[in-house]
Image (cartoon, rainbow, N blue to C red; front, side, top):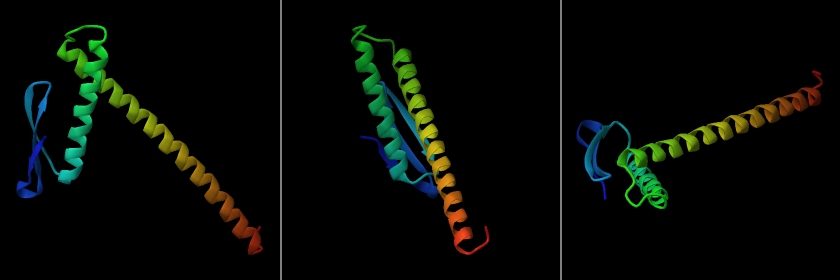
Amino acid sequence: MPQASRPNNKTTLEFDLLGEKLQVTASEDPEIVNEVAALVKLRLQESRRRLSQKNAQPARHNVLLLALLDLAEEYVKSKQRTLAHRSKISSKLAEIRAQLDRAEGRA
């Protein structure tokens, strides 16, 4: 489990990244840093498992690249969903404003 400390309002987190100790310092809330570290660890495990189905001992850099690509894909899809949601909200807001204007006799 990652270990976090918080000197000077910064979070320092140490965790194992495919057998290598990594220390990260961030200004974010320790809960966010821990959640990010847990997500990265999970994606690395999933990537290693997927690659192990093809190769008994996948190269470390391939595991990292696959995890990075998976996270990037998730980010892009999330961004697209957010933009679509914002567009729907903007359309609905314009519709509500038009209804208010009609109700007030401005249109």
